Image (cartoon, rainbow, N blue to C red; front, side, top):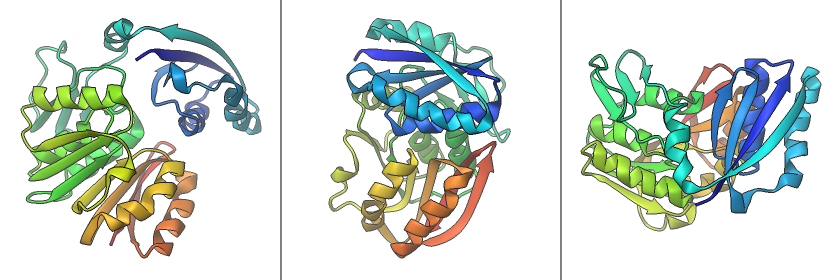
Amino acid sequence: MEYTEVTFTIAPYSSESAEILVAQLAEIGFDSFTDTPNGVNAFIPTKQLNEAAIPSATEVLSIMNATTQWTITKHEDQNWNKVWESNFDPIVVDSKCLVRAPFHKDMPAYPFEIVIEPKMAFGTGHHQTTSLILSELLTFDVAGKTVLDMGCGTGVLAILAEMRGAVELIAIDNDEWAYRNTIENVENNGCKRIMSLLGDASLLKHDTFDVILANINLNILLADMQQYKMAMHCSADLFCSGILVEDIPTLTAHAQSLGLTFVKSRTKDNWAMVHFKK
């Protein structure tokens, strides 16, 4: 798959402005991001790129008296290993879970170690939304439960859930690159109970789950939450992320209108995760 990289420069730069820009870009199809000293590099499948939508995605920064410039570069598939190896540092979540790439050697030992091949898929653990759910999975009891990972990216959330004792897991992503990357990462981590599927929430026909993890974006969460609810066992748990702190009321109101109960929210920087229960 051919990907396009758009390099955004923000002036004056702040981490908050970068986070807001990432959220806006995710709404128009960008699915992976790396931070730079003065902005963000954003990636999108070339066939999904709508250059005309970029200016409107950057307009929100004007309220922060910031301006944005960007340049567009198209890449072929074979470039991605090199691109991601240069940007992917190991991370540690709550002093319990190490997420690293195969080329990171001689790392300290932690209770959970996940090896992610850093290809073009969102979910290496670096983004706040991914680390929020990873952190939650380190304390939430999934032992003996069935788990759905929607918008799985690299499969990192499903992998940790299996390591924590989940007995049957399905990981779904509508991006073929992410789908293939999840299969690879599942195998590399010795996981045996994760099934990876290519598609979206329309695949949720008759299966039901004890836990659903949905780290996507606000629009998709709102559009698909009814299908999530139908795929939840009685008393099942839904963890949603990929949203900004300011989006919590909107997401919560929609979930409650469907009969789901708000349990709690967690935040990191300007990003949020919300836990609902059926």
